[in-house]
Length: 231
Image (tube, rainbow, N blue to C red; front, side, top):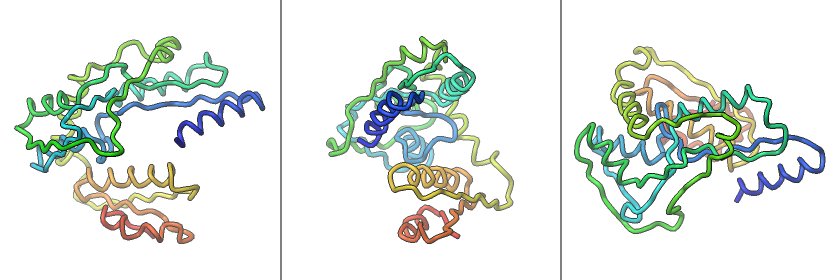
């Protein structure tokens, strides 16, 4: 709902004040250094760390998986482009939805059998995501998308190597400062980023959020559970 309202407000301000906005809708971005709360990250953990993998709706979900390097290329070309000079909404997507069971099978081919626990659909579940990418092709922001089999193979290779290759044995501090606007987007983005660093650094990074005015006090306990400190 907040995303829809944001797009509608941009449209109003664009007409009223002649301001050009470009809204980006990202569809299930996956790849190296991805968020740990995404489904594909949980699949990787289940394969290599023998964690339980819960699959909602008995696996009858589809996602428009979009590889991170394709996303980077689109954003890079968008920043250079001067073609778009009006209010526009762009879907950043591959336009090729894939059943999540196929994702699991792709990972199993490169690892081991995953213990899957299928369960009924949950209240907040979205059955399918499928974006139309005609606009980003129209503006020539990308020619060809990375095939899923290649993108997931690259992700698997990275996952198997990061534990040994990323950083040395010295603990490094990473500090975040977040203007506390609200509890919808800004806070969640900072927490997800810090969680990714804490998880994938094999305890060699210490994410710390600057708590200048006590704005993070209410979240201290949940942050500590994620190995994130406030200061």
